[in-house]
Length: 171
Image (tube, rainbow, N blue to C red; front, side):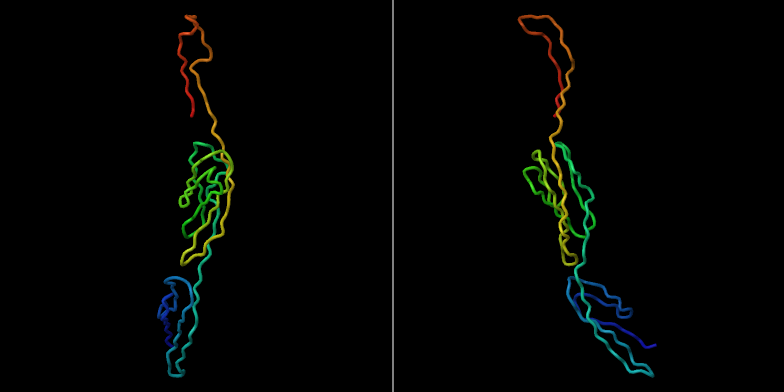
């Protein structure tokens, strides 16, 4: 068989001279590559030029961790999965909860509901995803009170009871 070689002058990709394997280098766009079949005893040489187009790849996105309820005092971090770039998070109501745009860590501000949006940002190789949303209800924490006793008995002295009550209040 005839010897086949491949070549390109494109800055977007390389092409293996002997196998024709195309490897993207950077960015998107189009470049030219060439297949060269050498002359043999019975056949003339031939060259064919073709266009290689590199486009940004799609990313997928779905919630990995996204609670629907969040109680004061809880440390919550929402997260997404599926992308190849950095995720970005936004709270629709920062007065209810703020969110670290890069890490997804939420900070409780007040009782209510907020919608968290998340998406993967695009870069030279990947398209941005469309945002996905999750509504999260933020609730007050329960207050607990513990007393060291449930009843007190004692002697009156100057109209006061001489006993200190111990208690634990959370928070």
